[in-house]
Length: 125
Image 1 (cartoon, rainbow, N blue to C red):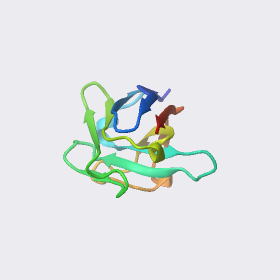
Image 2 (cartoon, rainbow, N blue to C red; image 1 turned 90 degrees about the vertical axis):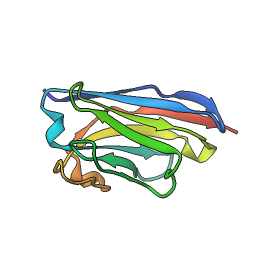
Image 3 (cartoon, rainbow, N blue to C red; image 1 turned 30 degrees about the horizontal axis):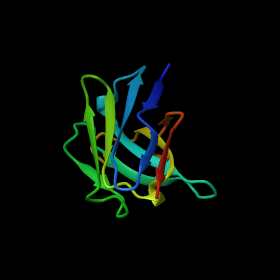
Image 4 (cartoon, one colour; image 1 turned 180 degrees about the horizontal axis):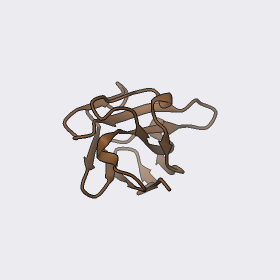
């Protein structure tokens, strides 16, 4: 059974940092891409960042480029999202996802077949 469990969410002031982690189990995740998405209240789920199977390629949404960093540990089956310079508009439930080819960094939700349950990130002004 595939499981993906996020952790690290919480409440932070604007300008602060948080580090999200996602622990995956149940298959070899090094053969697929991993990503982070987020969903704010009343809005659609949106792409945040993705990383290829080897970790050699990353891709970011324009809104987080330069502030967020995605990384993965293929041996440990974990993917992390370091979030710096957080702003109130970053407030959302953050989801980790796995799927698609390991060669790519997909930015659409339909490319991913595995999802975590989400972790809340709240940024106060």
